[in-house]
Image (tube, rainbow, N blue to C red; front, side):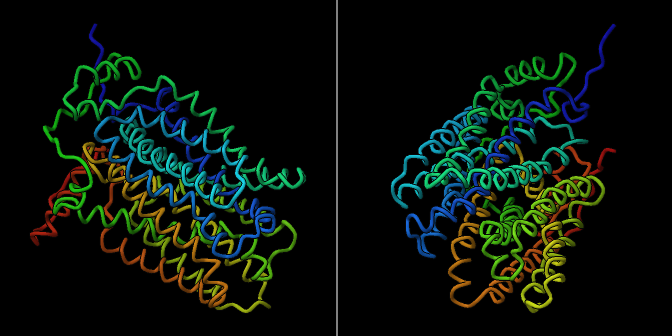
Amino acid sequence: MTTQSVKIDDLPIGRFHLKIAGLTFGAHFTDGYILGLIGIAFTLLSPQMQLDAFWQGLIGASALIGLFLGSLFFGWISDRLGRQKIFLISFVLITLASVMQFYVQSAMALLLCRILIGIGLGGDFSVGHAMLAEFAPKKHRGVLLGSFSVVWTFGYVAATFAGTAMLGLGDDAWRWMLASSAIPAGLILIARIGTPESPRWLVNQGRVAEARAVVRKHLGANVVLDEEPSGETRSGYAVLFSREYRKRTAFNCLFFVCIVMPYFAIYTFLPSILQMMGLAEGFGTELMLNVLLILGALIGIWCTVKFSRRGFLINSFIILALALSLLAVLPGSAAWLMVLVFGVFTLVLSAVSNLVGVFPAENFPTEVRASGIGLATAVSRLGSAISTFLLPVSVAGIGLSPTMGILAAILALGALISWAWAPETKALTLSQACKVQSLKEGALESGAALPKVSAPV
């Protein structure tokens, strides 16, 4: 009796898919934890090291600067040398640099440690998103990729509680806070040992026999590859800016940066912002917003499944721009209304952030997928590093309300970019999603009607 073959894209979710997802999610939990802790650590670190607004902004943005560098470098390397090696190396770097934070004696040393952590995280984002997208079945790809934001949010909120619990450890409490990220990072590093190479990447390199061996061992003897060697040998950033890919490159970089610039700027300095707005009533408002971050991330998974990717993105940008504009003009006497609007902003921002893990992974073909994800991540982290660095400087120079107005304008720009360029990739296989984008760009260049690509149900 012959067992019917099944393509990778048509598989049900299995144990191996969940394992790869868990190993990838671990990076996002660690990232959220690392970035969430710095805001609390600043309450002890700033007076102890006598940091001014410049150094607070620079250290607050340091991990994001590293993410920019790591995403660019490791994304390019991954498309050339494979996903699996970077999947391990990135967390070696994160674990070691996390421990090194405990021993720093100057602001410059701390800055360098956090840049190294960011480099590791940037490399992992590029490779992890590509790895999971290349293993995930089409029916579950959106949920798995969109769940990155949920796990990041859990890490961010966990940092809030862990940091608050460690405040009583004395003058060195901030050292214990920052070094504690070595615990999740080390566990993830150990768990990743033995992870296989992506079969799609192997196929693209012409190593079909190795790809089939990986598929048989980890997905089943009756599972077959759903793509053949493309003969495409191009890779790297020059390809991403070629005529064929430049529009999707621009879209993925710009929509990503328009989401994360307000996110990181506001939530890195959330305790200080709430205090300036007159909303810092103990730990209550901050706790509520952290709960809404988690709830919004979970709602975002449902929205990714229920609604079109394109519609979800555009409408979210519009709501966010309106909410932040209201926060910029509401008087301090309207405290409860400000809390309500801030809650809506937090909920929607957390929900739509799920799409930053979905669009880049679905828009680029295998030969440049990690480079495309890496570039989009790098640009987003550069933007968020700039906004995080400038927020305390801007607030000190022009005030909180004008600063909020600038961030609202960035969100409005994101709505326009998404309306003009966002594709619809829901229910398509990974190959079809990339093909649709190529056809769309070709039609736009020529002025012809867009050919139809059927989407399997």
